[in-house]
Amino acid sequence: MKKNRVVLFGLTLILLIVFTGCDSWSTYPPDNKYGSTEYDGELTWTEVSSSNDWVGRYKHASVVFNDALWILGGYGYQGVQKDSYLEDVWYSSDGQTWEPATMDAPWHGRTGHAVVVLGDRMILIGGYAVDEEASNTHDTDHYMNDVWQSTDGENWTKLTDAPFGKRAYHSAVVVEIGGVDTIFVIGGMKYGTYYYDDIWKSTDGENWSEVSLSEESREILGRRSGMAVTKVGSDIYIQGGYTPDYEIAQVDKDDWKKMRIFDTSTGVVEKTSRPGYPYSNRALMKMVPYQGKLFLFSGVEIRREYDMDHREVYSTWTYHHTSDTWVLDSDGSGFGPRRGYTAELFDDGSGEKIWILGGWSYSGPENDVYTAEVEASL
Image 1 (spheres, rainbow, N blue to C red):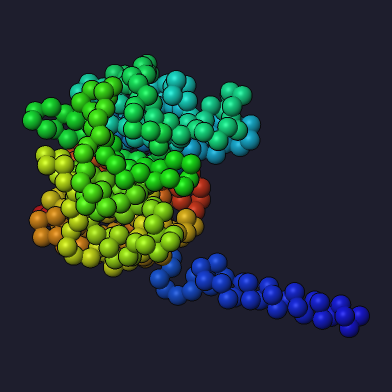
Image 2 (image 1 turned 60 degrees about the vertical axis):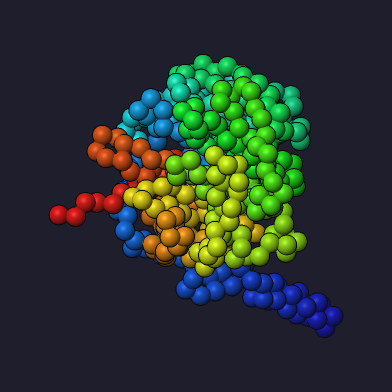
């Protein structure tokens, strides 16, 4: 009996150590830095719809095309009897009423893909593809380098298998250069371990060439995926994201938060001189140009995907690119702790707003829609 009491005491002690001595898990929440802080910044947030016909999802793609918002693919767990890797395409002119363009796109269920608009076409690029109706569901090589196009969201044509290699969680941006719209694909990862530090371009989605980066530009860009990327004029702004270097402590925390700027006219990547926002590095977040500044929204801590609701990754920031200055907009978020959502600038007829679509919250995959705007003063 005495021996049993000793064993029981030992197990109890171990459990106490585990549940009270481990950072993040046991002490959650350890202090007032955790919790859903109320948003109090300059934006006015509105929940347009809390639930839509499209299933809740994250790591999907969205674009503004033909005066409508479009949502393409993503992952939305629907139970073991249903397809969770989504190959559907939905569109809406107001963010409230959605119509399906197709529920069975030929690029199959896909996450971590990029979609851009080039002229009168939507172009889908790469990602992680799973056809859950096929026999190869459990194959490990689901990373793709294929490129698809569509003029209506329903009918898709494969353009090519691009030479830039299989990748997911990359970024794609269209910039006008010399009067010609050009797609730039930046970074990404494959197999969970290899991260890219390259940039590729195409004017038609079919023919691709690698941007010749100097050794310095490539080092400044760094290997990354799941980063926030947007454009201002002909410059592409790149912020944060996952990187393998972080795990071996080769990236300085403050340095990784500094904005990277790719000048598409010169092919040079530069790093801003000032430190980034003074909180943790984040990934699977979005950055949107609005009202003359870049708004950086909530994401996830790059080392802990379960950390979404403390102010280090939950806060809202603005970056003023003319002065290279970060300003705290709010310790809170207007749409809650979230990662893997999408953000678009869209005018539904009442003025241009920021639109937040879906994403992963602590409730799971969401199918809600939020807008943010700066209301005109009376």
